[in-house]
Each structure stands twice: as structure tokens, then as C-alpha cells.
Image 1 (cartoon, rainbow, N blue to C red):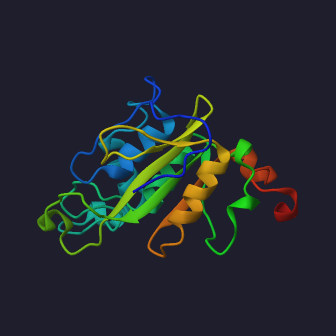
Image 2 (image 1 turned 45 degrees about the horizontal axis):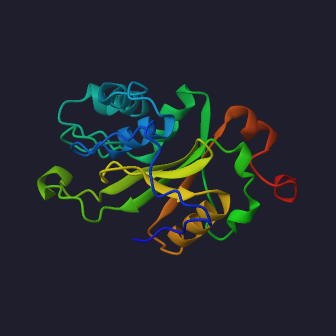
Length: 202
């Protein structure tokens, strides 16, 4: 897939950009750590603990499946787990309404984004899915003045460009009804609605 790049040449990824690579069905974990640019931000056991806190009944009952992850415990975490994890870092994740234009977003007050797409091209065993639809989580983050697409299924960070380029990228992604976007903001930005342009926050 080609990404819209702005007028400057950002073809070489910045060497300090962290990209955690895909293991099992842990793309939600990788998306969180890539977004936060911290390999130790969350571990699999951290996300499993969140699953158990979200569904304590399934933890207490033998043979009960936790609805927030793969039944074999290999990952495939749902959005509730990501949202709770980000809350632990004093961040809020909000679903973006695809019916609206990205122009309503105040990008300088947004921490980053998490994309959700159906699995495509990842060689994952159907046995691991056990009938549950698998979705792939990736992160978008502005680092060193440039937006990157941080996809654990790719070998390197993908350079998108500056604000105009990331707007085009997001708008193009959301043209597919199976693609969804989480806007990640600080709790302060959530309270003040400063992540939205003035006319949208009233």
C-alpha cells in the first residue's frame, strides 16, 4: 500500500523509532508499546490481568472463556483491554466517528492513534482463532516532527509524513468500513475537549 507523503523526503526512518514485532496474537500489546515507544510499558501478563479484572466471573469459573481475549490465552485482546491499559498511563482512547472529517481534530493536542483492521496477510493459524474474528491493531505516532505508522506486522516503521499527510492517510483508511480509529489523548485534553477544534468541542 502506498502512503501519502508530504513534499519533503522522509524515506529514511529515524533510527530511534521503536517498533515491536508481531508475536502470536499480541498485536494489541505491540500497538500499545509502539504507541508509547516503550518496550516495557505493558507485558502479556499485564493485559491478561486487565482481562481478568474486566471479566472476574470467567476467571473464577473453570472452563469459562474470557470474552476479552483468545480462549487459548494467546492474545487477540479486544478494545476494552486497550482502553483500560491506556487509562493506566493517564491516557484516554476515543472511537473516531468516521462520518466526520479529520479536520475536526486538533492534532497538536493528540497523543497518537490506534488503528483497527481485519487481519490481512498475517500467517496466523485458524486454530488460534477458534472461531473468533481476529482484528489487527497498529499505532500512529508523531515522533521527531514526523508521523509514523507503527505496525508490528511490518519489518520497519512506515514514514507517513507531517500533519497533512497523516490526515490523508487516516481519511483513506476510514473509507473502508472495516477499518476503525481510536484517538488517544491525555486525560486533560479529554476533560477540556482541546483535542477537537473549537466549533466541535461546544
